[in-house]
Image (tube, rainbow, N blue to C red):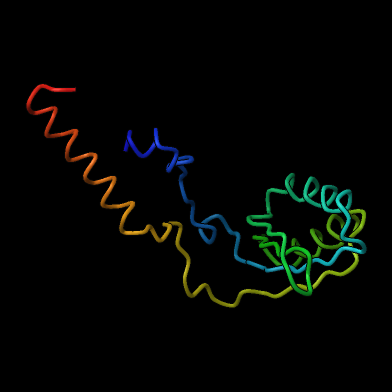
Length: 137
C-alpha cells in the first residue's frame, strides 16, 4: 500500500455511505446545454456546480449536451428545488433535461487495473518483503 501511495496510484481514501440509508432515494442524470460554449461560461457553470453537495458527478461532454451531472436527492420535491432555485439560475444555462434512474444495475468504485500494474505492484511488494527477511533495505 505504501508503494502504491508513493507512486501516486492512490489519490485518497474514502468511506462509501449508503444513500438509501440516508434517505437519498432519488438519483437523477441531468443533461445541461449552455447558451454559449465559451471559456467564461464553462468556468461559471463549473464553479457553481462544484459548490453543490447533491451533485455527485459532473462531466464536460461531447455531443448534444455540454454537461452531464448526477444528482442525489431525498425526493422529487428536492430535485425540483435544485432545478428551479439553482440550476436554472446559473448564468449561461440554456437547456436542462433530466432522466431518473429507476434502478442501479451496476455501481463500482474499483478501477479496472491492467495486469501489468498488478504484477508490478505485487513483485515490488514481494521483493521488498524478501529483502526485509534478509535484513536488507
